[in-house]
Amino acid sequence: MTAFSRRSIYCVFCLMLAAAGWAQDHRTDVLTPDEVDQVRDATQEPKDRLELYIKFARVRLDAAEKSRTDPQVKDHAQAIHDRLHDFLDIYDELDENVDTYADRKDDLRKALKSVIEADTEFQSRLRALQAPPNATPKEATEYQFVLATALSAVDDGAQDHRQLLAEQDEAAKHKKKREKNSGGEDLPD
Image (cartoon, rainbow, N blue to C red; front, side, top):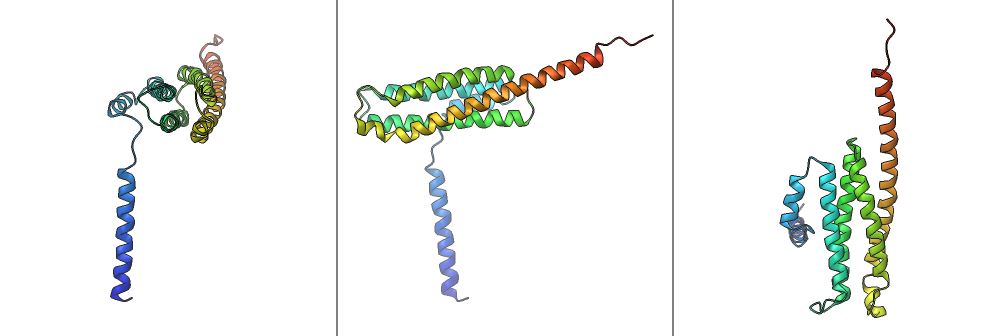
C-alpha cells in the first residue's frame, strides 16, 4: 500500500468520525434537564417513571395544539410538526420503559391503568389534529406524516398495553391461587 492510499484512507476515516460527532452534537434531546433529573429520581418505581413520561408527552401534545393558533408562531405547520415529533419521541420512551419493566417481570398493573388512560386521551387528541381549524390544506399536509406516525404508535401501544395488562392480571390470579393452595390448606392431624 502506498503512502498516498494510506493517507487517503486515514483522511476518509477522520472525516467519517468528524461527521458522526457533528451529527451527534446536533441531535437535541427531547427531555429538558429538569425532566431528565425527574426521570433519574424515579428509576426504581415503574408507576412513578411511567407517569412522568405520560406528563411529558402531554406537555408536548399541549404545545402542538397551542402551535395551531399561537400568534407568536410564524410557521404553524412546522411548529406542530416539531412538537408532534417531540411527543412521538417521548411516547416511544414510554413504550420502551413499559417493555423494560415487563421484561423484568415487574408488576405493572397499576401503572398500566394510567398508561392506558393516557393512550385513550392521546388517540383522541391526535385525531383532533387531523382536521385542524384555520389550517390550509398545504399546512396540514406538512405534518400529516408525523401525525400519522404518532397515531399509529399510540394505537399500537394502546393495544400492546391492554394485552400486557390482561396477561399480568391473569398471572396475578394464578399466583394468588397457588399461594392460597400452598399456604391456605389445613393439613390433616
